[in-house]
Image 1 (cartoon, rainbow, N blue to C red):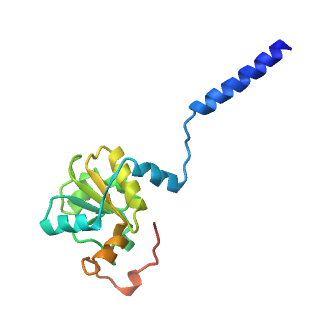
Image 2 (image 1 turned 60 degrees about the vertical axis):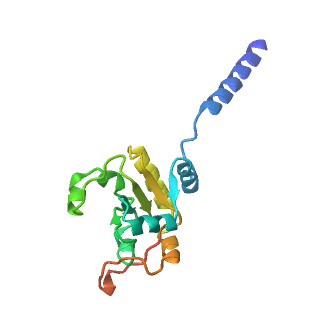
Image 3 (image 1 turned 90 degrees about the vertical axis):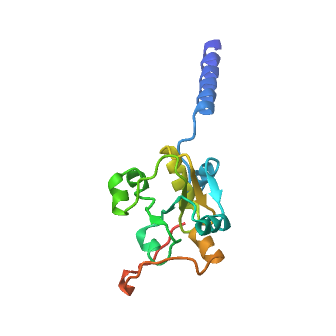
Length: 168
């Protein structure tokens, strides 16, 4: 009887130790954003506008898809979809196609998307890729549109080129 109790006790103890030490490996999208927020810094629309007006040296990345970028984007931004970010940020050919220099790891980078969450995750990804001076635009392009409704660029296209877009 003592052996059975010892085995049960040992099994329970092992289970408790294992589950206590086992790190959670799956997350919801909101948990991913919350975790990323602990490691990335934000920039407000007013701070970005001052940087734009002052001609500060930074890279502004729009991580929305191209069909979201074309109808309206912050002046000077480069469209680098979050879906290809990891593959193109360090690819010389990508930057040559944009007629820009590939950013150094410590160069200031500001990332934005439609509302903010993709920008947060993209900034976090860049941080993991070794880029040390990355921020995300708080509220994304929607916040920029509200604060500066007349300060944006667009790529002219036909009506057939527009597609319904979503995103966060």
